[in-house]
Length: 195
Image (tube, rainbow, N blue to C red):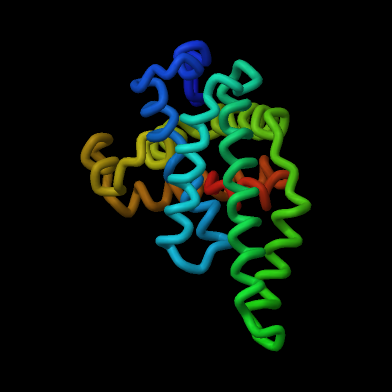
């Protein structure tokens, strides 16, 4: 069973639009979720995600690494830096007694110390696949359709001929299972929108 995105790095580096679109479609939602954890305005978070993809397109020839993990690490690191720069600019606009300034400083500190690497993604992905393989088949299928195919609960229920309540119960069971098996990476998994 394959969960990771199969990206031809040569095509991406050469400017193949369909490959770039594949990367965009695969990572847009999770990057947007990540940005929204730190950026108050949804529109600003979306702009930073768009800027990240624009940077990917502009610097695609200079990408290092040849795996989906290297692309994912590059995207998250670039977005992290864009969020950090945005927060630092916003913090300069605020009054020093403002509570929001305090929150910005906390977020700046968290982002500044966050390490995102290809190894981290590869390790999380490996553990995720192992945990998924240990789930009951129905539970795993429901989770995969929800998280990897982005189907709504009703669509999953219709395709598997089960009730929406059964879909919800299986997703809850799967998330509980994954939280146990990915406990060492839980904060990063939550920030990246995996759980």
